[in-house]
Length: 150
Length: 116
Image 1 (tube, rainbow over the protein chains, first blue to last red):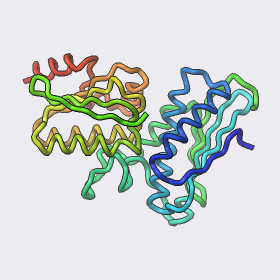
Image 2 (image 1 turned 120 degrees about the horizontal axis):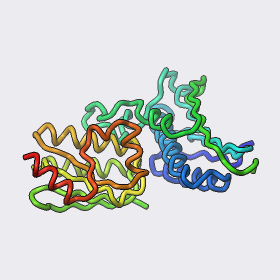
Image 3 (image 1 turned 90 degrees about the vertical axis):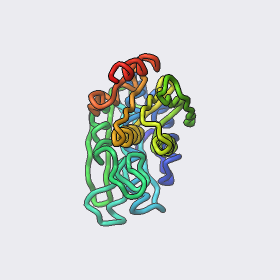
C-alpha cells in the first residue's frame, strides 16, 4: 500500500498541489533536502504530462499519483488512463498538447520537442521506469531515502 | 506562489521580471506577455528569472517560443538566472547553448549591446 495516494481532476492548476504533496511526503520519508527540488520537478513534469493527456482524451477521468516510502527508497508512480479511453498509441506530453505551454497559439507546432518532459524526468530521477500499459502511461520514479517504511 | 509578471525598458531593451512558479498552469501568462511585447515591437528582450521559484518544461517551451519570435525579427531573448535549481533544468535539456544566461540584468544588457 502506498504511503499517500491521490487522484485529481486533470487541470493544470492541480499540478502544483501534486508537487507540494509529493515534496512533503518525500521529506517525511527521509529524502535528502538536496534532492527535494528534483522530486518536485520530476513529479511536476509527470503530472503535467498526464494532465495534458487526460485533457485531450479523457477529461472526466482523474490523474492518479501514488507516493510510497519503503526501506531506503521513496517511490512515486504517476498513472494516466489516456490510452484506455482513446486507443491512442501515444499520450500527450508537456508542450505537445493544445493547451501546453510549449505549444504556440493558432495551431503552430510546439517550440520544444514533445518528449522534453519525459527527458527531464529521466535526467532528474535517480531511477525511472516508463511503462505503457493497456490503460495508459505509468511513470515510476524513485530516490534514495533515509527512513524505513512509513 | 503564483506567477507575477512585470516589464520595463532599460537602455532600449525590454526587461521582463518574472517572480514565482512557471509551470503548466502559469506558463500561458508568460507566453501571452512575450507575444504581446513582440507584437508591439520589442525585439530585444531580457527575462529576469532571479525570483523564479520553479520552472518546468512547459516554461522552457514558452521561453524557446519567445526566442523564436524575436529571432524572426533579428531580435534576442537573454535570461538572467543564478539559481542552481533553475539552471539545472537548462543544463539537463541542453538549452544553456541556446540562451544567453547572465548573472544580472545589467550584465545581460551590456552583453547584448556589445554584440551590436
